[in-house]
Length: 326
Length: 258
Ligand SMILES: Nc1ncnc2c1ncn2[C@@H]1O[C@H](COP(=O)(O)OP(=O)(O)O)[C@@H](O)[C@H]1O
Ligand SMILES: [Mg+2]
Image (cartoon, rainbow over all chains, first blue to last red; front, side):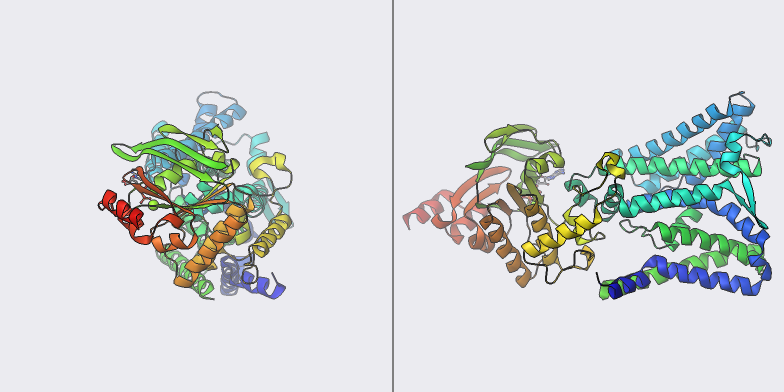
């Protein structure tokens, strides 16, 4: 492909338009409020970013394969609650308890995936039900109370939620997790054989199956990966704030899906972009943070978030139409 | 030499007996047209051969050897390539990626599904293939399939089937939804495929197409094969009446008398 053509297709790509909008938004917030780019505020945003961002990576792959998962917010809540209960009430070793949490996430993802692929129920219905089951379980095993704070430092806490300073910025190790997982996800989707399969399955499942692509297995593993990433994000969050609440992560599923589609991944499958998702995660984080800073009343806050998401989706749809026409 | 031989294939979906006792042979380098009304069992027959689902009963021979086809991968490994009705390509993938879907060239193969695609090889092989089948002038291997016309898509699907040196290429209604020009392009392509030595099983509704490209005609009705004729020995009217099941014996007699 000639360079000129490649450049124009890059400019027309969804992740590029998202990036432009992100930069505009950042500039607007920075001009509107000088504190927006302060080390404290940036550190704050970077502390939250990985927690939803990590889930969004899994969700991007899943959406690209044509499925999605509404139970991630609930898994985000249940995994740390279970781990903490086992440690605090059951006197389990933290490592073993974490392993149990991991197995729980794998089981939840596998059940989602098996029901969706083998019984053929839409992932909307399956994972909506799973959301209720998992959230209900978290509330039941804790009787609705947050678990008493966990403040014993140790290997796992440092691994998941340790922090370090760069100048006057304070970052958490979770940022490394996010960066590392992002690089891996980009590699998978764009360069690996698996990514070719994921896109093909979401684009035209029957065509992929006819070429011998194991579509069901790929989807089941993606459900598992998404669930595990949600649990990992939940552990990171719980360790960071030294508490596990049974209602943690409520509403995250929609926030994560918003990040992914704002970044340019198609809700209908086939077209996914990890770079776009990273931009989308940054964008939603910046919007949520910036809107408060510039003094939009707290109750009006979701109006703006919703409108910006809508505007982004309209933009992507228009670009898509344009690309199809040319 | 019989490339493919089917013996007494049977397949039911619940109480629907989609295939009752289907037997046919496909010889080397010939185009056989499989005709029949909607619901006759044509798609079921070719899905059974291409491993979309297992048959209930019957035997399949490839080059005289009995085989069992339990998955699409089995069929591909036996050299049977199928282009299904409207479902053969992934529109969001590039031409090159579609051409090698399921058989991607990779580096570090031991990494399994995590192995990196050999993108250079992929692109090179794709352009070579497009050139070989004579559609390289118009098409860029990196272009998304969603930007192609229906006829171009069918050509891509057929060239994909050719590239793996398939013994048998099965086309299920390849000219559905195509314009006149594109239809002729695909039919010309089918002839070229045959001339390159492949055997083709062509499923279609359109009898006129059959007379343009096929060597033999096989007609199915209600899950059974009801007639088998060489194109040279029959004509449009006869075949039409067989398909619809009009008074066959009388018509056949009449045809033979001619
Ligand atoms: N997956 C399926 N489940 C149930 N019935 C099917 C299925 N596929 C085909 N059939 C039935 O089998 C019969 C043959 O269908 P098909 O092979 O698609 O016909 P054709 O391709 O000749 O139009 C029809 O009665 C159809 O309804
Ligand atoms: Mg059919």
